[in-house]
Image 1 (cartoon, each protein chain N blue to C red):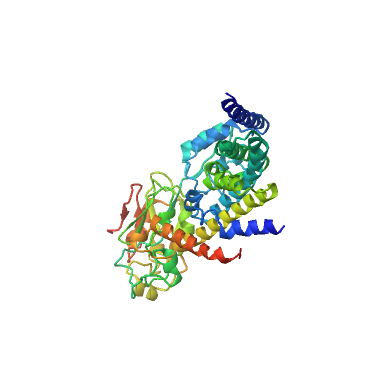
Image 2: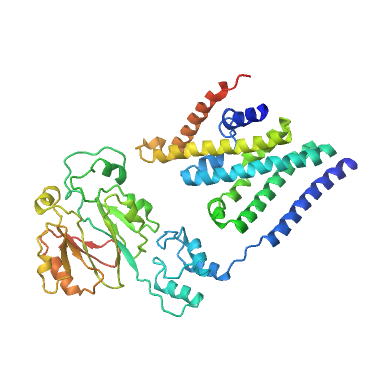
Length: 193
Length: 278
């Protein structure tokens, strides 16, 4: 239990996928314009990431390890993620049209989200057990949503400020992202090893 | 040989299993879509303006087709497209969505609106309005073009601190109404070919106060209401036109010519031709 909590906090804050591994930067900059859409994207990523790590774990340990085909992990994980996203999209569309309205547009974007492939690969290199992998995937997604929401909040506020011309647009967004990453480095001392 | 064969088999089978699953699920979870939805979606202008009260054209098309919502006409689409949509839906009753347009109730240019202080804050109307604005008039257009940014069709332009609405382009979706912190916009029905008149002032103060802040404002002199069969009415120290009535061009023109501050303006159906000379 202690392990799981440790994994949860460390993935959420200290080893945040976006700000310390620089994964999933494109949605981080692309969908962080509005809090509403950032929330939708964050929830969709959390959902798919949890599923991807758990099903990826099963396939890796039950099939790949058995045949000694460790080098196939990249291809297989991509396959898993792509099909998962498709299936999830179909399910949501069939059974909850309101959820589809709010999440639907973000789901196809997730197929190419490197944070999800990254979390699946980390799960392998860190030799997680099944439950650990699930918690890792969930907290990774939550960490992504957290950072995305913080970024969206800051960017919404920036709208009300006069910005010098050279900093307008992408420039200030990238600087904000860099400062956020610096701030998150402060969490490194949160857990004494 | 085995070293090649096993990975091929494993990967192939995993891929096959997933594709089979996907194929089965796509059959089982198929969502039946009415073919009329796509057809109507094509006829709708695709602005996603939200004037109909739905989140976008797609949501509107789905609601109309499923019968959850009675089709009452899409405002920006225009008469032609609305008739075609009604035909697709087998509606026998004639649908007439009157074309609507937004008009701006401030007609003062940069020099005409007096400003006793310089405003150096953020360049948005919302921010300027918070501290009382960049101009002395508490009702007039601030000119930071919040409305231009939200307009989905680019019908609004700003020239010399004065807002122009292109009646040809405007679909009357009402986004500018929400964007303007001073509530200067109004959505009014228009008929093609009719020259349009607008009270270009929203100042509800008395004549004395208006004169202090603007040279173009309505001073509530009531001259325009005294024309024969006048379409103008006084309300809150302001002249107003009742657009629901059928007003003749003669009476509107007569009232306009009498206006001492020239704050009644004529809008033509040609882009950017607000007649400010008279």
